[in-house]
Image 1: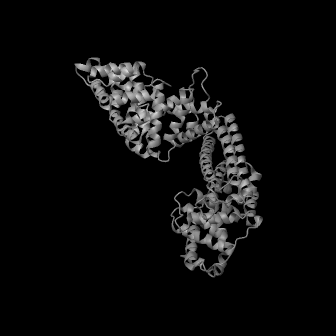
Image 2: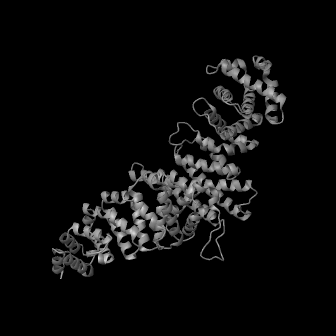
Image 3: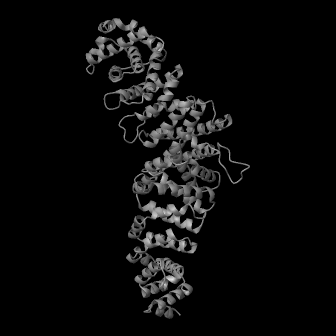
Length: 616
């Protein structure tokens, strides 16, 4: 029988070849690659290309009388032949890609579409040239035009996923974004629907594809495009899918992927995205508006606990000289950063809610959230305690841990109080991978420090671990002359509040400042005051300078090798200006004005040249 097929396929007339091909499709099994190969060799690539072109042509006569049948035959044969890898990767198959894409754009016969998609996938996956031809011929545009109309969970949708995986795996995201932003937006909306409605393995494929698109480092342009789309066109589907993953028994890796996707959505739309009424299949029992938020925080807590435990093992127990360990550490740190980011967003959400009279969340939900956050921060503190015991003081994972702790303690400064006090000095000493001295860790803790130092107990805790030196050094970097001057005064004023709180309680706390610390602080204050016109900044700088002058004298300062009269003169002018301002308006800065004026009366006799500045 096979010899008869081959004889017909090799025939001189088209009618003979077509008869042979019809027998091939009827009796030749697709998995019999050797037979498929013999048929292909007997037929040759040119007849198949001519058959497809003729079937697509308009007009009458010849093959066109049965155009749909011949079209179906040619596409079926193309897909069958390409199941043989070396045929799929051949140059001859590349010429068919634009034609098959044209068939998809002009035909809607389901059987033809399935084989078209299969052909495109097999050829694109078989070689770089095949993929390049598919991409350059408008592969993304085709997927965008088709995916939104495909049946949910269909084989065509599955093949679309495979083609999209090829595109994302072989093409950099910036190339995709620069050429096909609108198409990618449509594709993401289609993926979001599949992620929401499916309950099979394709649901997870949709999750992975969404993350590959939205979590890319180069996806900022794409995210900007999504912000312009109506959220109700796709965003609720993402929320539904995430909730389904987090509240069902799925693999831990998939839960982590769901969290990564949630982080991407929150980055685009803000923390409020986690709160929203979700319509389910049961219209009478919609999901509560806070369900997604609670599920995300709960899973983030679990994920952080697991990841930090695994990270600690890799860092302190596993062999560190292997590439596998280094790669695992890098991946764990990346995943921890995503989980941390989500928790910090939720902390910010709670902060905003409490500032808006609790309109977004009820008291019961807030209680649940705070309980989860307390447990999360306790786990992070344990991780830092373990790192301290192992002598670790440098690492972006440690710095990120301090950041999340600082974010929460800014809202709940007495949370985990004893543990925080035990680790305070250590946290202030931590450095990121690219830091030479601690800076960012101190910045992250400043909101908490400015609050706890309002009480004597907090001042003593900071002083006992030599935390004032860390704050002074941070302040000098924030306002100093070495490119650290920042536009956002938030950190600067919190550092100032912390310094002032300690200096105002110096008698009860017994703070000792060495000469170098005093000199560095005064130089930083002079530089700050010279580079700002804001009265609030000048009053703050003047108040701290006033309190520092209690520790020394003009003569002692001028005897310091790193201090000169120009700096001292700048500080004198600052204090003189603030004294004059306080006489005119005592309401806006009453407390600071009182500090400056009372300080001046205490130490003016030790700084004889300041009176000249005040008189002028």
